[in-house]
Image (tube, rainbow, N blue to C red; front, side, top):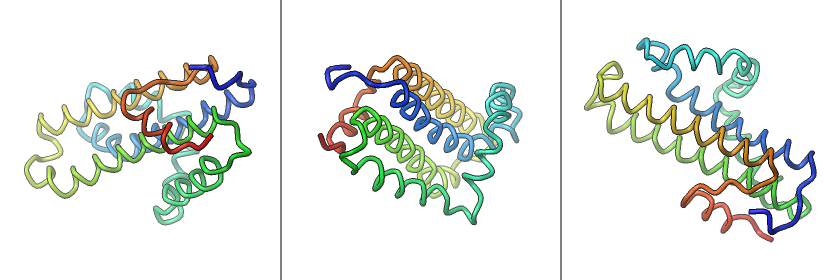
Length: 167
């Protein structure tokens, strides 16, 4: 969707950078389990982790509060700021919503499913692989759409992002 006007190259770059957050979240949430289990996705995960390792160190540093700090900073300083172009605000809000979904998965896993399934069970590995591949696919799709200057349309998530981003 490009009906809100054209986006400059710098807008496209900032919109693409927003989707690093879901990648960092999924690596932190399920990446450790995939590495430990020797999943078939471990080589792909290692390929992704190598260039992101400095960001991972910063993101998960500072006592584990950095994701929360980044969430509030992005939401208050970017999404709710009318001076930031709509294209950037929409993409940042969409990446935040993807991160919230990953956090909900983490909570459900930690408090409900981990008592039923061992992390090395086939059900848990299938669940981790699915979450990792879905997040990777959605992030890559959104990065390509943002680089082209288009609004990445993800069912339900995009609608929620549109309702949160003021005009």
